[in-house]
Amino acid sequence: MTRYTQVKKLGTPKELRDHLVGIGVDLPVDETVDPQGALAQPITFTDGSTGEHAIPNRFAVLPMEGWDGTTDGQPTDLVRRRWTRFAESGCGLVWAEATAVAPEGRANPHQLMINPDTVAGLAELRGLLAPTQVAGLQLTHSGRWARPQGAPAPRTGQPHAELDRRVDADEASLLTDDELDELAESFIVAAGLARDAGFDFVDVKCCHGYLLHELLSGRDRDGRYGGDEAGRTAFVRRVIGGIRERVPDIAVAVRLSIFDFLPHETGPEGTGVPVERDGLPRPFGATESGLDIDLSETHRFVDLLRSLGVGLVCTTAGSPYYNPHVQRPAYFPPSDGYQPPEDPLVGVARQIHATAELVRAHPDVTFIGSGYSYLQDWLANVGQAVVGAGDVGMVGLGRMVLSYPQLAADVFAG
Image (cartoon, rainbow, N blue to C red; front, side, top):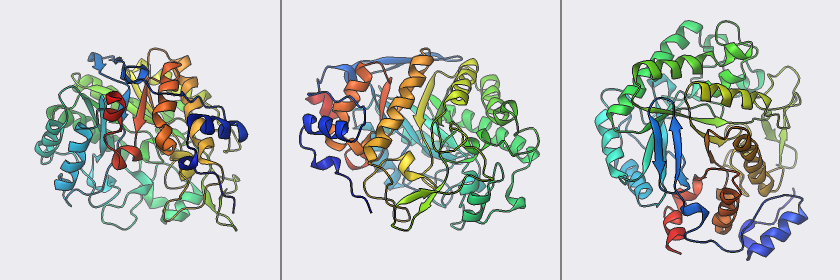
């Protein structure tokens, strides 16, 4: 099993730069962090319906949930404590946690839900955030990863032999077109409830192998919501179009897995290895091999989002369920995962460079990047360099904001 140099053992920016050169990774690292520098500058995003939204700085809280709500989807003291810490973080934007639009779409029995009974609780959470923070709510259906009662209860968007096997999905698990029509209505209604709770935007979540992300790669799905690119994007178009028509006073954003790779499994030495591509759908944003990036369809999808008035996109990649080293680069694997098959800094740089390509091609969209937490002590040094170079609009804080919620505030305090 290969062991990599942990980033925490690199004691200076120069040591990090030298290590990056040694492993062949191109990643900028500033020598010092300026409290009034690039990360402290304001930025705006422009929504096609609600106009300009001013964000006071370049740090964002990413959607970090604790699966610690009540069984009926209400916030608890644990949820409120987490949101209070987000308020104290110093981040200019809070992209609030995944909130299920339907009971059967919950990833956990304690995931938050949005419905008429939970609006007051969600409004209370919004009220905990700082008045200057732009706040959005992530709307989700977990699709094949749904576990509303604890046990797997998959509702899939397309057939996938490997992932179907992992969650014991069958033909009956596949959502019909009529069921997707009803679910689109649930997303639209949820957007109105999020507006009532005081949120500035909703995220129509398209990432990490959840339902809408799976539909984007649904080449093997029959019917109105699969097949060609028009079919694979039809659900997203229906949801966002419905929100624009019926809830015009809330902005719409999208968190998007901008590329995906084949599912991985634990190899003979404990390291992650990809499963065979034969017969499996081509992942979204990947080459035919399923192991390299091809952003062609990602660019087209971002163009589609912009045509629908979306001006804010949060990038991510892969899925925590089947290729976690792609989604959240880390030295230590998840408890049910495999050892990383590459230096985690390779994964950090992969996301940063892919996001930069999108930023350059779509200057009228504000992008928030992900995958920075593994940088640890050097997160701000790299984030400042990437923002300063114009390769991302904002730096998202995910795992880092849970363990060190005041990072952004400390950066600005010097």
